[in-house]
Image (cartoon, rainbow, N blue to C red):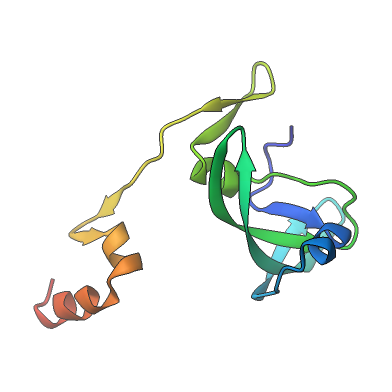
Length: 118
């Protein structure tokens, strides 16, 4: 299992088969050098864990490549000693007085905090 990929990458044929929508593009470094890939999102399931993940679409790749963003979102990591998936903790960190979930889920709270100088 490749542990060096940040994003999950799917082949173009898989993207077309699933009828996913492109939401943007990402510049990424590959073995062939810098390239620009289409970005999409999908719900994935790995070992009974399901979640939404960003993914990139490759015209060159023939097989699915699971990235660390997907694994971490599902609470999984690769055990480098045996090359298999294992459970890991999902961390929710707070930067200063700004809650991560508050930033994502309640943007009106951001405005109130800025107005109060926090």
